[in-house]
Length: 321
Image (cartoon, rainbow, N blue to C red):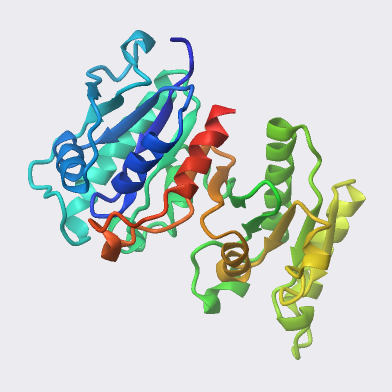
């Protein structure tokens, strides 16, 4: 087997991720092998409780011999933490386990030719605390790419990106800059050209309602419009700023491949309303492609066998093309 493996970090142990992984493994056939970094004990326990029955292929080495891998079994690297129960509440006691999973994944990606990384949802409140805003920033720090990455919620019809990520609204305007907007656009264009041989059409929103404010100097006038003018001058295919309350209307959005917003909910709410789970979270700018399903741990749904695997399926298909 000479296919580059997809590395998957199972993430928060008390989330719905293993359920949607089992469903995805059953529903689609992936040409590339998958290596799941997870507690074997947790995996087998949840598999039994949820009613799935897959064979396990235990991988011992961190420098992978591709001959070890199987497409018919779940290839796993066991991260053994005996305190883990099959189902429990999310808390900081998972932190050491999650950190170890990411450390193994980053070593694999560094030492082996892999397709990229998928990670299951992480509880930002417990694992990241106040040090990082999200896994995007966590991985940027671990790979020396601080302030050089961008978050793209990708769907082949329409994608969105944010200049700031998981910031409180009162902090957003302080964290906007021309540099961030330009970097974001460049990373998106590079991604689309490399993956799809396409020069994407990009719309950029304003920050304030209707792209205006009562202040003498708005963020549109000081930051956003000068950024757009600079990008247009450099021949980038961007337009804006657009009012966020109308850009997602069908007659507007159909003209663009990507809409860039200034803060998280400004573009995440409409894209999830339009596509539901049919989207994936891609981190641009890392030394490898990183994707996560576009949903959180959803602890309240654990063990109910009702969670939708579509976003993980789309993530796996993205790597398998």
